[in-house]
Image 1: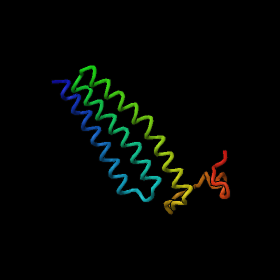
Image 2: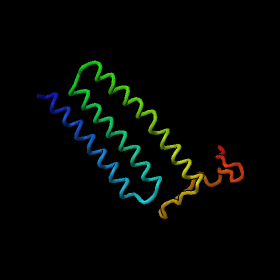
Image 3: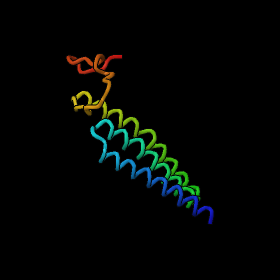
Image 4: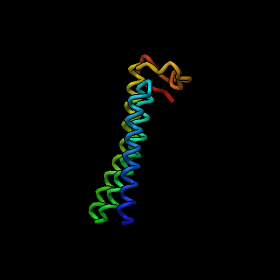
Length: 117
């Protein structure tokens, strides 16, 4: 009984994070903040859901698969978000009008299409 309750808590927590990610995609004003919401909350949501699955089905193969999927998601989501953000910046996707700083403005070479350090 305790395992089912713990699993349900993780599944509901994961669903809540996924809902927050979806809400961020709808409510945030520009690509960069939407991407942030989707990558952070989506990763946490999927992590909680996989943890709930691993708790509900404690077979070693299920736990191993959950760990592998979790590692894959946690390794690829930040890289994908970074690459999408960089491509959007290089394509000059407009920022939200309330954006305070553009920290890459002085580091971008327009002629070479590269970012300096």
